[in-house]
Structure formats: structure tokens, C-alpha cells
Amino acid sequence: MSWKLDETVETSAGAVAAGRFGRGPALVLAHGWPWSSFSWHRIIPDLARRYRVHWYDMPGYGRSAKAAEQRTSLDVQGEVFAEMLAHWDLEQPMVVAHDFGGATTLRAHLLHGCDFERYVLMNVVAMRPWGSEFLRSCRSPCGCLSGPAAAYPQSGRGGIYQRGDRK
Image (cartoon, rainbow, N blue to C red; front, side, top):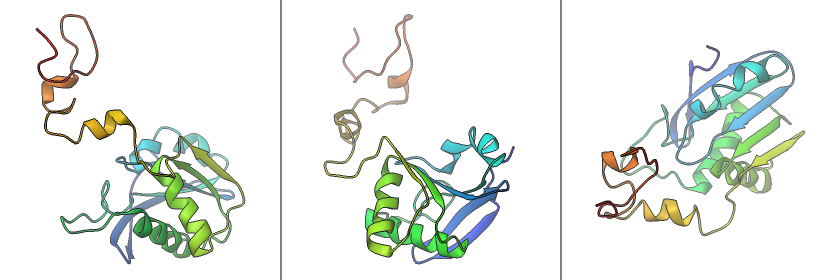
């Protein structure tokens, strides 16, 4: 398997777990919320045939530093993205960003002077309100993911249900 986090980088937001693989022009992957770089693990081998692929777990996610008081907001993530490019000595890489990773990389570009040769944004969340109504509802105590059994199909019917929806 080519995806692994075999590098630790000290950033302004703490230790960041990172990896790289392949040969060729630099390509940086930025994951979305609330995921980690593992979300890219299936496409990294194919990309690495043509590119030097770089990835990391954003602070507060995956195998990077996490603490109850740790800030993981967009301003922090944009700064850390710029720090990661500097660490890897990448001046103008290609960037593929998903979800919150899009807002993170956009912030790095606009506020921290990071330039990209090419820039692919997928399902990007860049303006408030963050997330969908579904994900926002999951935050409440009676939300759709309030119990471990809530996400399992029952009686041959799949889906995600709120408690009390089923008879």
C-alpha cells in the first residue's frame, strides 16, 4: 500500500502526520471535514504513477495532533497548508482539494501567497453556513446518528433514521 503517514512535521498547530509517494511533478491532496488523508488512499497509487503525491492529516484530524483546546478552524488550516508546502519545498504544485480542504487551500492561496500550477476543487465548502442540513442535524443529541444502531439497515430497508422513527 502506498498511502502511509511516515513523516511528522512540526507546525504552528502542532505535529502533523504526512506522507508522499511517486515520481514526477508535485501534486498535493487536501482532505475534507471530518475526514483524514486516508480518504485518498485508493487513488494515490494511480496518481503516483505520474506525480509525486503529497498528503497530510490536517491538525485535529486523523493521526495529526489533537487536543480538547486545539483550534482547528479555517484560519489555522490555511496557515498549516502553507507551512506544509514550505516544508516540502513546493513553490507551485498542483492541488486537489475536497470539501473543507478547498476552503483551506483557497485561504492559503489568497492570504498566505501560495500559488498553484493547477487547482482542482471538489465539492468545496467555502462559504457559511458550513455543511449540509443533514450534517448539522447530527450535532444535536437527538440527531440522526445518536446511537450506533441508527446507521444499520433493519428488516431489509437501508438508511439512517432518527430514534423513534421506526415502529
